[in-house]
Image (cartoon, rainbow, N blue to C red; front, side, top):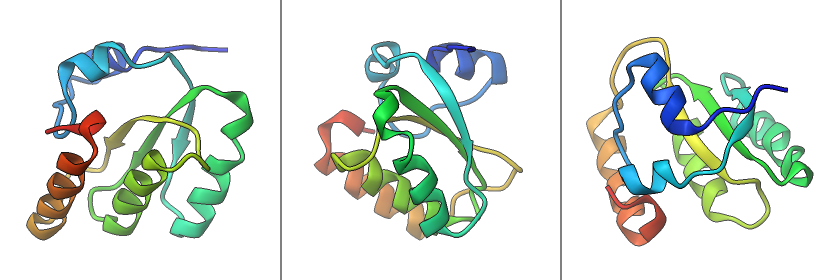
Length: 116
């Protein structure tokens, strides 16, 4: 099974870090589970929750035009019911809507693990 550090994924994709810190990313666990979250939020969360027993971090790929998925993943990351979400990769181009980006920043400030 392929295991990747989040910083390796960021480097390979030439991605930018929108939220989080370089230290948190450098200290993140290896991820061997990659989930494409393009379906309904409830289906995505059920699939992610099913990976809890693996005790490994997961990387989720979704579209920036899916604020429901983005906000649901952030809530799942903060919950002990779900596995650790080590990264959310935004694919498909586009930008996060400004109001959603502001809301994510507010949530990130409350959760020091995700300090912007």
